[in-house]
Image 1 (spheres, rainbow, N blue to C red):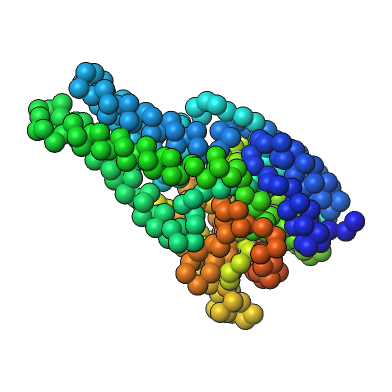
Image 2 (cartoon, one colour):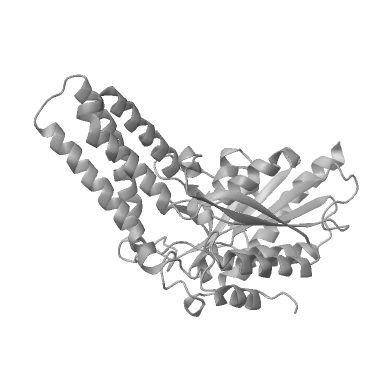
Length: 402
């Protein structure tokens, strides 16, 4: 059956969910791999190790810091050093940097799905070792644990609560340090116990939804992004762009902490043409208007400022995208593209948001196909194609001058 957006998103949404390393990951992989093969792609499925969900990461961080706060009166500086270690791990993880806490057990095996095309005009052309430009189309296919914190009435305060938690973790570290330096006021032990209670409560609130309801169906987050990435690949196949190498990666374990995209980047980055690789990430294109993400981050601000974004931002002021695609920011968790920003690889992320800057229904039981608006997907595909072509033309001109 020929690929269509409606058919593929329907088939993906028929699975109860696509949680990383769950029983439903395998049929999702089979469906997506077969779809890519029907489009004449060479498909590779690559395994990587990851926690099953972010719940174990949160439990490690809270247990580690809380134990340090609890035993500080007896272990002294050992407890201080131990606690600061967990604070650093938490700071790294929640500011979307690599944190070794993601490698603590229990670990499971998830997979990335990679499709490549190498026909004339779509893939390698001319010099096989020097493509004019490589474009990577990316979207995560896994679905998120359901979270009580993503309820419509509370999701806007999620970022604030995360910032408060990180600040209190830093405060806990300094409190332990000052206590060992001689601060012996009677309120110090009670403050330590209060911090323990706060961190434990936050951990329970942040993970209770998963234990009660499991994973979301993920029609919007992120079946929409997957079909948009594949639709963009199909459109590129119809264009004649000599020297353009095109690759698609559908990542697993994004909802754990962007684990799959980091594994993909680390494994393949050295094989990409340096200075001539660009990445387009599609994430949650249901329900809302299309946004070009410019800023993310929890406390550390992650800015999307690169050559690909220059091409994309020019399109924001041109027809037919003027007023239809808007600049956006997202400070509740992050995207697969964060690792590419940090490695200074040109990348952009497209996402749909409502007027209040929210992604409706994500990480919730309501994330079902029945209430997912697919109208943003064609706009995202068109915008991605126009950005890629414009960016490609700058490389093509440069290549002709060499």
